[in-house]
Length: 449
Ligand code: ADP
Ligand code: MG
Image (cartoon, rainbow, N blue to C red; front, side, top):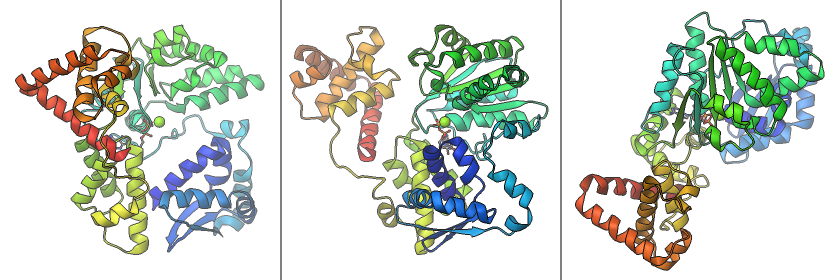
């Protein structure tokens, strides 16, 4: 149930923004669900009335969206609400610069406590990034600096870099600063406005480890990039560790200054790709165990097979399943799961299309879709393209000329590719197994699409 609230809270944060969220939603205490009513505890009366006037509908919608059914929200008063007036008043004040100042110098950074190495499932898609993260956590500032981790949404970047923070923090003396790049930018703007750049610089240059999450948000922000460039250099020359995440490699972040790009590329770059089926099953099982939920293995497999794109979605399925099962007091079977998740999982018997094949093949070989469809003739890309053409012919009803159009080529090129790859599939069993793996992925992607 905790997970349910965390996820609903994430939705609310997205629509309210970080400051509004911390002011009004963060202080609420989720007490649980009874039937279809969620109960939240507010720290005092003023607070309760304020939230109930302005945010009740948002709370209701966010919780309902997670549960997949309409949910009522009840706001109650906490016991401490009346007695600890001072605390209550402090908490209702919007956090201005004073809130930042109030944070004592060496306070534990705001690391999500669930995001540890122990909770991270390692599979082929993330093992390199995981190994790099471990190395940095064990020898910060020494080997890979900066460490730059990139990958799609919900694949575990924030989790992994937070785990570095935890491990360093636990190892003792390290000053670890974790921060979304957007927050870095906001703090910079505030400091500029209040003429407090001295403090700003001091704050960042003092840390031993700076973890900046989602640096793609720096794109196009000149002043922020300039300041970050100086922060980076100062930390780097003192051999302090810098860890960055992004949804793309540095060279693909539009509007990123060249000098920053060079810095970002100067350490180790590791990617996280979508997890394969085995890893997804392991993740589902681990999350269930963590939430003390007993999950039959056929249900774990069902979820993993049907949700393939993103780990956050996997978790969402599990959260909803747990909520519905406890509300209905029903055993969690595959049928129950299918119904509970019907709108998250759309089972499609359709065969994959040309676009889907192009995308899956590009992902599989870790090349960009635009390159696959381009005229580039480097050997690797040309080979991936031939595989994609072969699969389009084999798995769809499209003619050679139509397939050719999707690649900007004529039909003879497609025929040549088809013959070439068919022959190799016939002669080379290792190669055939790779092709079969792509075909399996295509089936799974289809079902999750
Ligand atoms: P990103 O920052 O890449 O968008 P997150 O780190 O926020 O993704 O991960 C989304 C969710 O998926 C988190 O709850 C995280 O714990 C979970 N997750 C992602 N990858 C893994 C993994 N390999 N093992 C366990 N949990 C994972
Ligand atoms: Mg993230």
